[in-house]
Length: 151
Ligand SMILES: [Zn+2]
Ligand SMILES: [Zn+2]
Image (cartoon, rainbow, N blue to C red; front, top):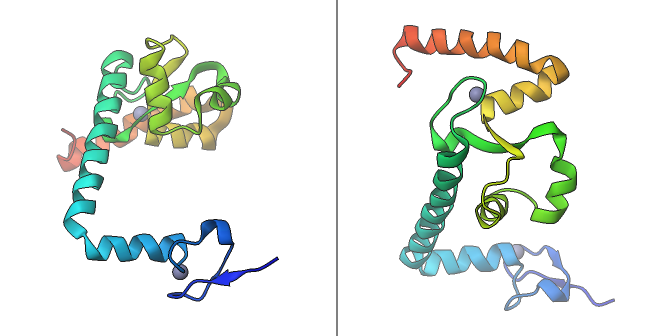
């Protein structure tokens, strides 16, 4: 099989990924450099769109069910009862695809809101996470309050 190398970074690239003799990474880097405004705008509108999706979803599901976190950028939609694996196949890889799916399907009652901290904590504590996380979240909130950081 014929392989090509990127004219910029010299990395081997499969012909299906070739874009003007460059690998995708270098190609988009170049585009970005040439049209910073255009790409900045695109990135910006993409971000806004994703934020809108998230705001809609969490307006429905509410704050983090454990610690009450309200800042949208920290929240994620969590599958109750670990149905995540099955559903992920159906609704895509997560991220904005998931949020689109939720909105399209009229906010099914299989999700709950978790913040990234509690989500992480559940990964650490497993089944005991509910009680452990409550203790943990309270400690964090106390600490933030003491430092005056909690809004
Ligand atoms: Zn390259
Ligand atoms: Zn939380």
